[in-house]
Image (cartoon, rainbow over the protein chains, first blue to last red):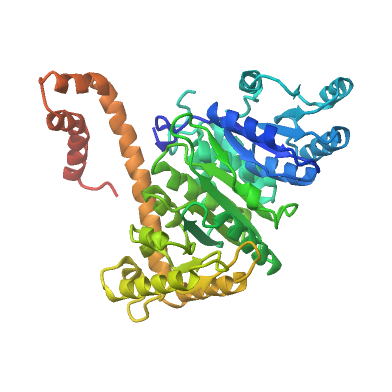
Length: 144
Length: 355
């Protein structure tokens, strides 16, 4: 019997980092998803624009997020995503982070991203509920 | 989730073993372990008390700085520049940025990181965003414990940043050794706001955005208020300071976006730290703070015991219904619930202490 079990306190919202990685300045999508996640009851850390992969990794590790959402509209996903994955691996944080990518990703590249370990790719026009639902179902139920 | 943490002495061996591993990794300097420890602290996860107890003996060396001010005053930007300045001095830095969560969805956007641009790529600045999660009161415990974790990790400076809007925020910054209150120039409304309890907790006042209009007036108003506070002997600022050498909070002007005035602010913060060392003010403040912490923990433990007692009496809903139906009154109900506890304590008092 202790404060640890206090009612209403021990509930952990899903923690997400929404990150704009690379040099494209299109952050409308990232903003919309950030707000949708907040309204779904998630805690969302937003990175701001123009982050380098190592900055995104730093934030993901320090914030100890369950979900990392990368927004990329520059076409550089084939370079940026592997860099982020490598960074996460170097902190032993890749296995239990749900990595999702949103933005403009050509169909041919999606499979390659998935093979690398991206859980899902959400293109333009994806209904918000679909993304929220996906995160709810797949956010790693790590640690007790 | 089941109640697998039974408090002191009753923690499951698996939890204890995991805590041991986590603490070991944290002390070895693994950032991931530090992040996980803070997560467990924030969630009040099973065994989190045991975890903090283990960390406590390794803490106590960090300088803890509280930064508060109204929304948009430039706290995050200032914290960013301060962190960079401490890094230039060779200090390692931890930052805890507290943001409110939505009372409707429970979700939160933690945006303070956007402003933390000067120190990205530098893992020796560890920034952690925390949301209030509607846990009034409990948050100050979680924040204090997160500070302990950063301290034990070896951070030289820990900065806690929060919107100075209410009692829980005031409680949070009170866990700091030195509190800086941020004000932006303008209509004077901000200075008005300070009357509501924030003025008393400031050790250093910062007028940010000092390149905009109305700076001189805001600074003058602040100085006047600080002087008035020094005159009235029952103010908290005086009771906390050494009697013969009361602390006079300085007012520093900064432009956080350009870094102007950051050095002066650093000097003012150092001066206050030196003052705490030189007089008995630092010691007294620490004792006050720890006393608050203990009270908070005891209160939450007692609440827990009483919540169980309420359940045994049929649950709060049915008790309320009985009062609603005029069968009894709230005072009688409260007495009935507390009675068993009171009896236990009375019987203990009548026994000789078993030492």
